Amino acid sequence: MAKKVATKSADPDAFMAALDHPLKDVAEAVRKTIRGADKSLVEGVKWNAPSYQHDGDDRITLNLSAKDRVRVIFHCGAKATKAKPKAPIVDQESEVLEWPSNDRAIMTFRSAEEFKAHKKELAEMVRKWIEAAG
Image 1 (cartoon, rainbow, N blue to C red):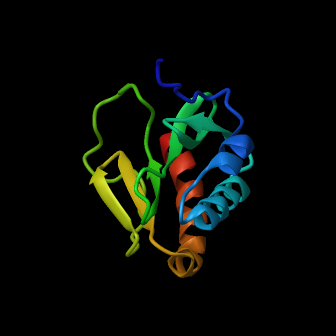
Image 2 (cartoon, helix red, strand yellow; image 1 turned 45 degrees about the vertical axis):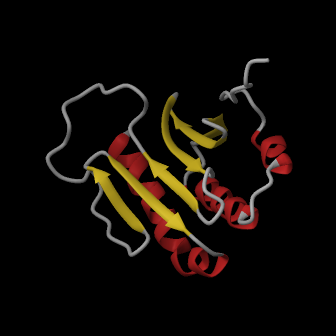
């Protein structure tokens, strides 16, 4: 039997209801913060996690594969359309933010307390990312 792969058409609420993850409450809080930060985002399920599109392009995806953290991946979609930027496309620093490349950033939350301490930074990053990545 082939493994079922979630797609954008999948219901994120149903996905989350069925999710078995020790930090499920953190993942739910992250979802709420992302949706509240930019009302234009369309939430779906992609790569087996909630994912967000802006104007039809993938921009933010949760990564729930590790059981000890919730990661928020900020990206510019699956297809490279322009040359790689020479500096990070968003001017933001945080102890929970890392930049694997100038057009990809990751925020990592390992507990509800860590999320609460950086919730405003997440909302700010969402707004800045959508503005910069389009």
